[in-house]
Image (cartoon, rainbow, N blue to C red; front, side, top):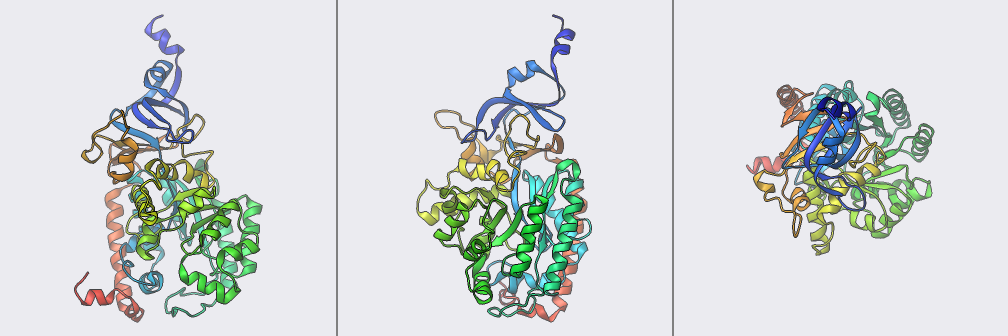
Length: 486
């Protein structure tokens, strides 16, 4: 057979990734395949196997040599608040971070500043290998378009609450904050309009969940209306649950029940729900939520900083629940980087239980990939490198000093080093739906310099307005500023 005949006999692929350390996430572990290859066509994985086999089988328009790299599914960030990247670092090391740190900035966050924050956050997350972004925000002009233009996969949640204009700015800790039915109804309608416009957009890359901000921030009837609307449209519900003592205090005062019991009583604990944080849930409440079929979004970095708590993800998983990792908001967490969340999740739980075997590296890597995808309802589409799934793939350079040496026997070191030593800066190439969004560290769809400049300018304008507003005098960190500690 001539060379031309052999090439004619080969199957066609748009892209062939060869000579990688494949972490497919197939099965119950990480699905490791040495010297592995992937074939991609039409935005999907059409083959995965040894490099020699796939090179013989496929003729590709483009070939990407992954020698020295880990090849794994794109990371899933299940819970983000991207607009707050524009005020990164304003609400740490304080009690009542939302009221005493973030609220004055929230009052002055213009749509333009929110857009600058979202762009910055998408750039940051994409650079560190996040391909699926579960953003949660009050819709503003251009919000969804950022994700569309960047080429990433997005699970967008428009915020629904009944807090009157001004939100929590000026609210006194311990008081029962007011709820306004008209505000809640308008927020629900805006969310439904957004879902109708964007669910399934961009060839299916952009999908929508409905987001009651918390059961303490909306009345019972409207919370049930959200559930009914989500069921009618086949959407999931993405909601903060048992989020801090503030929420529990409000629930007891308003409804006479703690959050988990209240949600169980109104039929909210099922597979439709992605429950975020669970910081105040008891072990029994956590097990009840998991048994109901809900999934959990775990934000170790954020909750560690703003609450000093390790959320009950270990209990949730032991009860059979699915857990996804989230980075939350940069105003309190400081970064939106799933490598950071993997490491902190493993470390915090080992420390909490005084047991080095709790939350091993392979387990949190699955939470960042396949288990996270399953938790947000995208497990059939992404999260593992399998035939038929979307080609959302990242290449991580294992030859960086902090990830060397690469050992395969007697103990393979790739997964522990990715979780405990990687920073995200080692990500070299990012692919979503077969399209290369970052190649060798260079962005292909985003103007990084312009995004950075716009975010800096927008942040300075927000800060100027906060400084001119008397409400800023309630910010807890002013004492640290006066003492020269910041």
